[in-house]
Image (cartoon, rainbow, N blue to C red):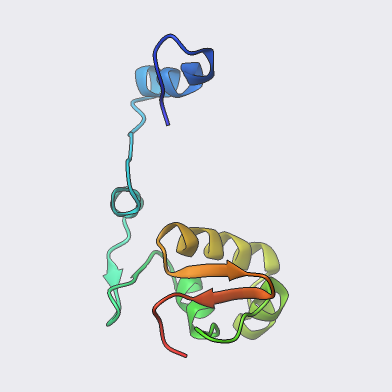
Length: 108
């Protein structure tokens, strides 16, 4: 996120915007739009890929599941699951708890 033009810590963001026509986003909806996320399920949750659907399908709103358990159940690698969880977390669809990840406002 760019900051004041006088701040050295903002130089990288400003350079990306100036030299590479980077796009500034201010919320998750703009990020989803920029990423081309268009598919929506009945709960109005956006999905960028089949991998996200696979992870969501093996998650629960009540029982936290670890990355390893989600990877095993979804058939994805732990690295892929971690990536998907990051995107879903940014979209507000999942939440990390002490014992693992759960769906937010989703099905049980």
